[in-house]
Image 1 (spheres, rainbow, N blue to C red):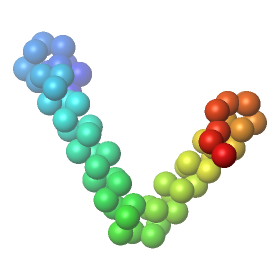
Image 2 (image 1 turned 135 degrees about the vertical axis):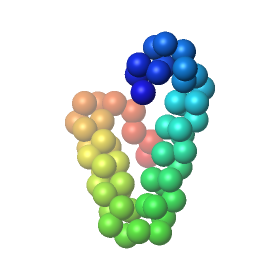
Image 3 (image 1 turned 30 degrees about the horizontal axis):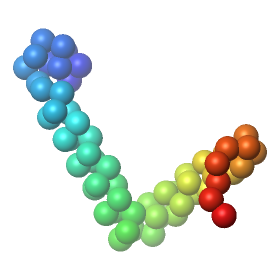
Length: 60
């Protein structure tokens, strides 16, 4: 994929679109699959805890 992007046979816009579709697919899966939803929740809990520990912005 990197080679195709470098030589111009694959447009950056197509890569961006593909990555967006992947994120959307993961989101939909997390809304229907409890295992994926739990993993997504755990990821954001970890991020929030690290932000709080670092003194970063957290909405109250």
